[in-house]
Length: 355
Length: 119
Image (cartoon, rainbow over all chains, first blue to last red; front, top):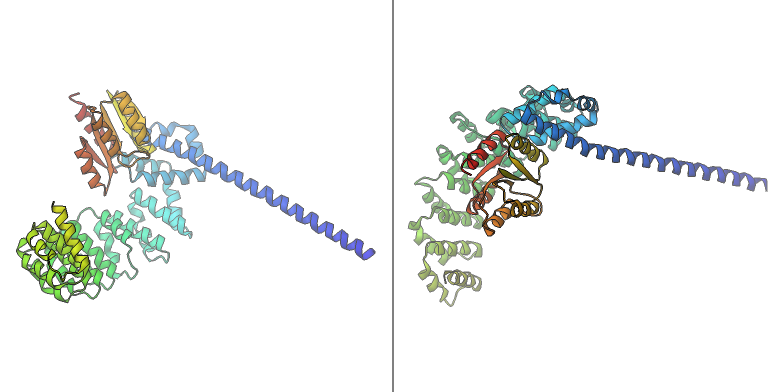
């Protein structure tokens, strides 16, 4: 009986403790939720307030906002400063000229640079990225050294942001990291970097040529994108050499690039390499002829129509003949009883669109 | 002079608003494309500054509505990098000018003044 009483007593105690624990847990979750709600609520209000101040300053200058005591008080709050930094990063994509200069003035007047440096030197990757972004947006040249260290960061989010930042802050010089880059550059990153390069000088062409023989395929593709963007005709022959590259996507990109820098020899070279190429490359070569609109290659095109069996190649050839208004040949071909049914459909579609 | 601003980015909207109000223009603010079309038809502004990508209706749809209702007004399109095709379409639909973001608000003001000079 006594044993049973003790057991019951212990059980009651355990249940009470459990109940208390659950109650405490519920209260903690409620407090946490409320605080988060307050933070989100404040964040939106603060964002509106900051945007209002920025837009006012862009127009009236920064003198007036410095007199705002309420605003000064809010600046003692670290969360407010974080939101301020986010708004400045976003603003970088909105304004240039005088307006951007005012954003920069605001950054220093409110000592947001101090917080930006802290973020840049933090061990937290998200803080690092934020630090890099704000330094880039505010064009803080002094941060280049520190950001350069992040190029070797193990986290892709950090090193990608550092790559973009260095190029934004340093221009073409910032692309030096490509010389020894082993990690792949994503398509998105290539696009960002290319967009960040606004001008090139003649002396930069040597680096671009070197990247064309880089072991990292993505570096080659990026170099090709720069050649396309800036129409660098003097690198034509180096691009032609890439037509022997083992990687098919490099060759495809090389042909696309040649369309922007072609000369009198380009077409002959492409026709010469055509027979030994994979179907994807052959399609690109036909597209090349299509874009140049060179009718003198008509016999070559007609030969392809006779010899090739790949439907994608044939579709391109039919498109090309359509572009050159060579419907007679297509009509003749359509009467061929041995013709592949898929090709016949493509030809009939082309002839139908003429009507 | 009445200017309609159609832009879903609050900071851009307010900055341009400040600039224009100080220059003595009457400013109508629209935060989405549908609101901009309704306001254009109702208030017949002298000039419209519109973003291309907006909720409910795009800048292109605003231009189409202007053309459809035969409204005589100047339109400045604010575009982002990579929207060249859309800008071309905007010009076909009667846009008077365009600016690429990020842009300089002072430059926008000069273009607005130029277009309104003969109004």
